[in-house]
Image (tube, rainbow, N blue to C red):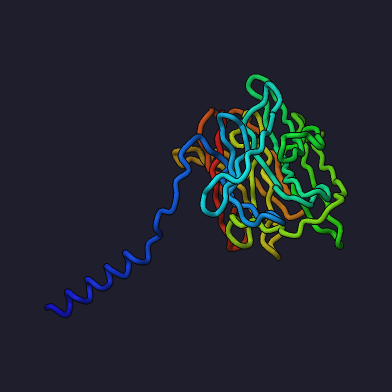
Length: 258
């Protein structure tokens, strides 16, 4: 009897030691939390303060490293950031980042701007809703997906970038084999869901569920495209879950309609 009790106790102790230990809590109105790797400064926690709209970077000991003012235009909100780097967009050592915002209700539209660490706007990508960077035969390109209220006028712009992204590691990635990201999130009238299907998979299914788990939308997605525009249509405000099924891979994430 003692032997059995000892075995159970040992198993419980092992389970307790295997659990993660809370290291730090970022207390505040933060959103879009992620991790980035900067060429000169290494790995940083990165997130947006929803009250000031500043982009905050923290060291691995959670001390504040840098505050980047986004200076979003009047009438816009819900900033989201992409591609924080030092040498992708130019050759100086300042941090640059693409910030996308959506127009506040009842207005519609987006603002997509490249800013550096002091908040200076370096370039504006009109109507951009989602961006990605690619190494094409040794030359870095920026792909900007542009939304329009009429889907037939949506477009994709490709920019040749002067720099190199030597640390193109998105540490906080989605599950292996499936990449996806929606912006803006929260959304008003529409959002762009960027995706990359697993290698060898040519089509998939996108399902959208409401908070009660009821299927609200479904459509087929293809590897011939890298994004899909999700229009609000008649969906009420609230939280939703989108699900992507592709081959043997299934992944989900949440988004909000305001």
